[in-house]
Image (cartoon, rainbow, N blue to C red; front, side, top):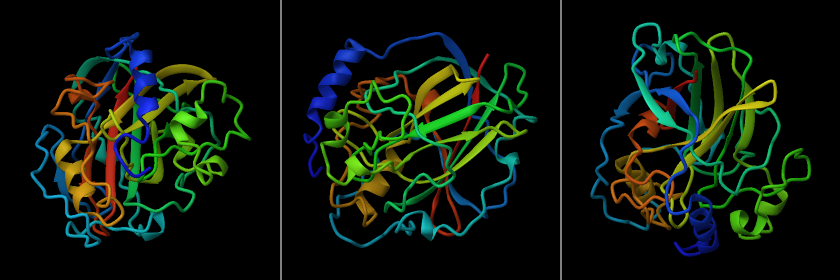
Length: 293
């Protein structure tokens, strides 16, 4: 998928699903509790309120001018950070928000730690914590995530999925022969006693009409508690898309958050922004705390 229009049918389907606006569902509480010490020697924290596109030129070249790691999850050597990263015991700032749509590119996948299937890209530690309305961690919940690869393509091998009826193969994979036999960037973890799950993945790419995002689903005893999506600041996506050798050939995403044109978030994206930092090994750390009632 080499240009911004290559998944235009997906754009049309999303517009149909949304009816022109983001769908509001039952409410939940989501937090962006951050700070605290961690074990990954992280640095260069990204401000989740900074929506500047960064003003970077599209180099289109192969030079990694941002010092990000490349080559997928094999390039990651740092440990996952300590749970103090979420700092829920010290601060629990609540924001009432809404569910977001599942989208047409979901199918259920297996429990995995590394969901990359050795796919290339900027290696990313994805850390999520689920807490209740009193900020207590919730153990034993299934947290499932899915997202596209660096080219904006979703994997499409549904052969082992028990829930593939809603998946739109052609729309989401572009009928890529590689995608049709792959399950990259999909997986499930069960929350531990800290309400936490950790995934090894890679920073997603983009496709027409959407800002770069990651879908997630939370289940309790196989019943949905929440389906939604998180996203990244424009400044971070511009930096990676313009300067990272595994993204720069496609350049900046065609739909930024600041444009207000994303078909899911519109202008209401603040509560869905990941907290992010660059790890000492050049990988990306992205984390978020989710509070459900």
